[in-house]
Image (cartoon, rainbow, N blue to C red; front, side, top):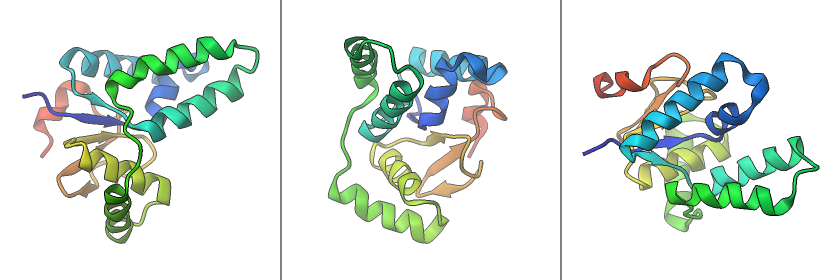
Length: 148
C-alpha cells in the first residue's frame, strides 16, 4: 500500500509560483511523484488557502478559470474540518505548540490516515500520532520509505 502524504498549502504554492526558482521544480517533482502513487492528500482548508493566494496574485484572471483549476484538486481531498478534527487539533497544539491553522492541518492529516505531512513551515521530523512532518526541500520523495 502507498503511504498517504498530506500536502501543506505552501508546497502547492511553490509548484505554481514562477518566481520560486528551484523550489518550484522540487515542489512539482513531489506532486508528480505523489500523484503517480495516488498517495497525495489535501483538505478544504488547503484548497481555500490556495484559492486566496491565487486570487491575490492573479487578480485579472477569470473566476471560472480559477474555480476550474481548484475544483480539479478535489480528487486529492476536499473534506471540511469537523468537530473530531478540532478535538485532535487541540491535542496537536498541546503536544507540538504550533499555530492553530497548522494544528488543524496536522489533525486533518492524522484523521485522513496520512503517514507524512509535507511542509516547509514546521519542524521537519516532528511527529504527531504517527504523522511525520517532512520538509520537501531537504528530503527527496524516494526517501520517504526510509523515514520512521
